[in-house]
Image 1 (cartoon, protein in one colour):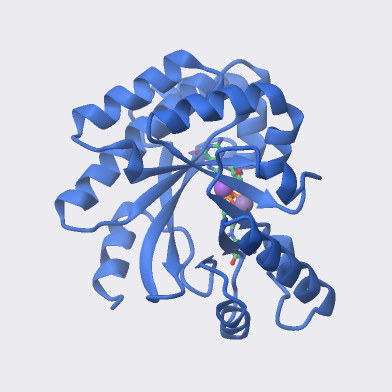
Image 2 (spheres, rainbow, N blue to C red):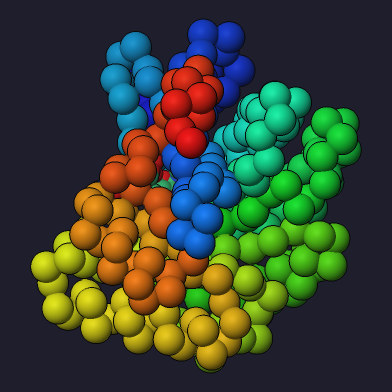
Length: 255
Ligand code: G
Ligand code: G
Ligand code: NA
Ligand code: MN
């Protein structure tokens, strides 16, 4: 059974094999929800649960990433419109691969999906991993500039794992970095991680970048991050990624 064949079928099936989940991010100044990261899930009757990093890589290699991202955009923007209609003001962060930011068809589709729902690009954040960005630096700059001119915002995901520098990011139209969870998971007990995170936060401050810490799993790490001036946190301590229905009840029970 080929994963590629199954994925092709899942993309056009009506069986809800693919779905989106949303993980809340909290603004540490207000302690309120400010954004949701949209994460894709694939549950196949034969293959079982296939992790996204696994099938996204396969989709990129098999020429299927346009279809996958197209599916993600459609679902995510429709869900965002639903929550906006309910009165929630949070933004949604969508993960894009480098192939996506070079794909004019996909970007035109994104703009028209937003327009159809009466949403502006400011309602979205686009997350690109640091390693993707470094691998394709010159193309990335061109595409990021074009999209920024259209009102889109970018965040650099998994920061600290991709061998770039904050000085390099200074030349990119990027407002936000997400410190990789490998530096955050043991933050409360690991002095090396504390040193790294402190350094990233102080440099980000110099370069006027917003900082998100992902992988916050305990109160102690959250307190440290707040004290050190981190802007936003995300992680299991706040919430796991949630289905739309679960997110709605979570929001109702969160002050
Ligand atoms: O949700 P989870 O931690 O299992 O996701 C693992 C990785 O899969 C994430 O770090 C992210 O890079 C990738 N991923 C999840 N959803 C999407 C998506 O919708 N599009 C892309 N391109 N990558 C995604
Ligand atoms: O690569 P990316 O940063 O997009 O991956 C985010 C993934 O990290 C999510 O899919 C989610 O499943 C996972 N994640 C989110 N919060 C936590 C956390 O607090 N701890 C751990 N171990 N994983 C997390
Ligand atoms: Na991400
Ligand atoms: Mn990440």
